[in-house]
Image (cartoon, rainbow, N blue to C red):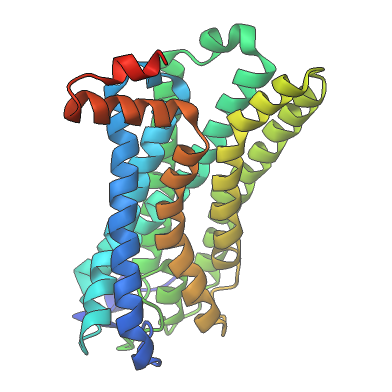
Length: 321
């Protein structure tokens, strides 16, 4: 067991990020800034529409609001510091800023895994148990599931991040990434990190693999129920109900599997940076687009809000056409 008294705390860290490719940094700055603005606007719109339109006061949009708020928080915990580092020669982040960053990113990443599993259960109840849906997904259960997602993510972040923070770093403060992340902090330690790696693998199983398993089981039941629907129209409606969530799950899990299930000691930093760039910035930006473009309820609510505020209530006439 390490002596906590010997733990070193550097004044700050150097985030190497994409400094090995200086000609790429201005291009990345513009792209990241644009995607970040789109992400905040898109997810903010989802939250606004879901709260304002009473037709969207359902379990599905309650969880979608949580997901949108989570995405805004996640990108905001990483992107501002990334933009600062891309803009100029200074690549540093304070010790406190680094600690806050990996606590929050770990918390929200784990929360999103659980929340996506909860959303798949909601779709299972809607399609496989339609007559009992309102009884099953009552407001108290929805609130409890959302709280369990947030508190579960917070718990694993507090445990894993605190164990990582206690590792002695022996003066090494260069992080070969664009944000502070647990496996990369572990690489800076000058002691054996086997215990931390075991904890990370256990947490990854509980908060990444297990929710994915629950999602697959839910959609296995959904697929079987959809195949039993005789009409093509009924099958199409059932598919449209789930397609947005399936797309979001595929984007999220497809990008984080490599990042969170790899050994802490790894040489694949460059590949990991671009994968991390995708799931920290691109995926949160795509989520509201996926739900908006493929969801008639959201598009109708958007039109209602826009025309109600800017066209003097003419939307009521257009919706009857």
